Image (cartoon, rainbow, N blue to C red; front, side, top):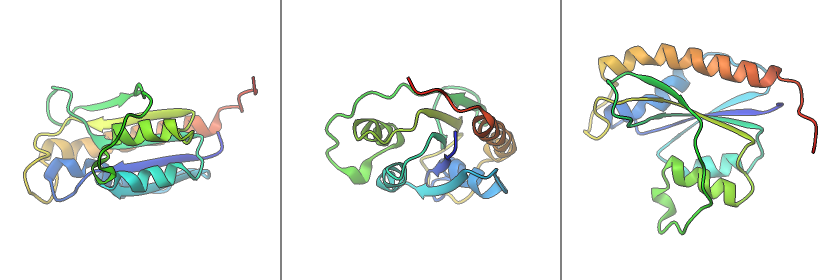
Length: 158
């Protein structure tokens, strides 16, 4: 891989929904070939970034998985073809990935580094203590994933 995008999504004004932007802020330098973007809740902005062409995507987000708050997950999403999106302003990460797939802009490799929120719906600035503690773990996952992907030998064209 030559180019990896690390994208933080979420609304920092909704408490733990700001997990993605918080991880982006804590990442520090990444290896050459990796770039970060923080798209907030603007799903279309992420789609526009993906249309620039990337080999890999690490998406950072609060994810509801029914676990204890602050639990970090590394997930490989199943991305279906896009269905009609009635309002692109409401495009959540799942829809954005589907739209990117349909447009031929979805990177070859996609992982989600997510965290179980305590509260991602109330108006609040700042992460809950459990989710704030999970940021360092997510940063470590991002560095491991991005570093590994960028060091992999190029895959032979089929």
